Amino acid sequence: MILDSSLLIALLAAVSAGGLAYALLFNRIETEKNVGKRLETVKQVDNDRAAKKASRDRASELTKRRKSIQDSLKDLSDKQKERDKSTRKPPLRIQIKQAGMTTSMERFTIYSVVCGVILTLLALVAGAPLWALPGVLAAGAVGLPRWFVAFRRGRRVKAFLNEFPNALDVIVRAVKSGLPLNDAIRLIASESQEPVRAEFKRIVEGQQVGLSIPEACMRMPETMPCPEAGFFGIVIQIQAQAGGNLSEAIGNLSRVLRDRKKMKAKVQALSMEAKASAAIIGALPFIVATLVYLSSPTYIMPLFTTSTGHLILAVSGVWMSIGIFVMKKMMSFEV
Image (cartoon, rainbow, N blue to C red; front, side, top):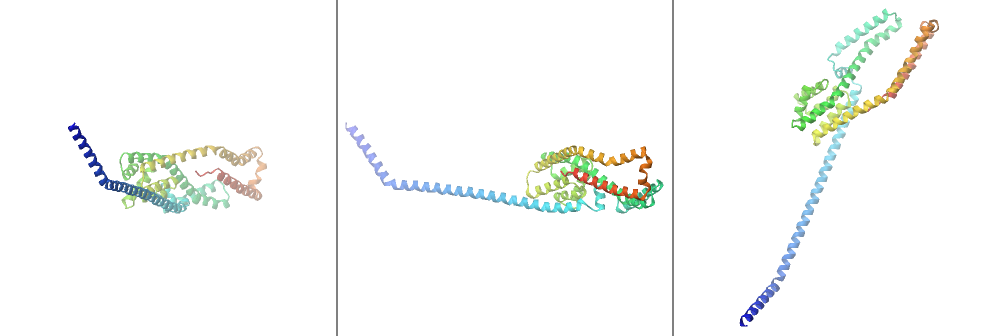
């Protein structure tokens, strides 16, 4: 009994001491809890503020980058418009270069004069009237050589567009495999087919004289007059200024060029009916004149032997030329 009383007294004394200690330390404990809560609140506010600041910084960086890209696109668009003005109707010297010909202007002039003289002599031998010989000379010395340059130029552009997407795919694979863009361009300049190889050789030569890759690529439309060459220069220029995935950008360009080629083929197929109709309508007067001459020569010969007939033929030729020009414009579509 005495032991139980002692234990009870000790227990009560411990409980009393604990209650007294809690009563004395309650305010301090509450103060520490409040301080901890305030610290957590301050930390949370700081974290929220830091997160908001980071979000604002990211938004500001994206805005700056977007504005930089827009400014770059605007500058490139202005430069491209200036280039288009000079490449749509370039001087004859530039056209000869774009056709892939190495003939100088002096030699080209000599060839034009010789062509005009030969064509005039052939017309004179064939019995052409004297009043028509100056026109034949002008056509042989001016029209025929320029038509030949335009023909070579268009054929070279067509060959370039057929091979250019394949060259871009090679650049994409080279960049993905770890090669720098400079080495990929050199690979195209040495392994690709003409005229793509010649154009990329000019880019390499431009780098050797101190031009950067974007600047050298932006000069490609000067020797290859097609929008696709300008697209390539713009993509390289934007990637150099704004950064990004180069292989993805060039891959997208290659896909766009292939889609443009398919669209051009589709438009050409849809316009073949109109072209056939135009060819039939344009050839019909000559066919009818030939049949009339074969059936009754005396009926149609006054057109070729009298001044009135010559006037009728001249007016008819002018009207036919206008009709053919209008039909050609109606069948021409820009893709």
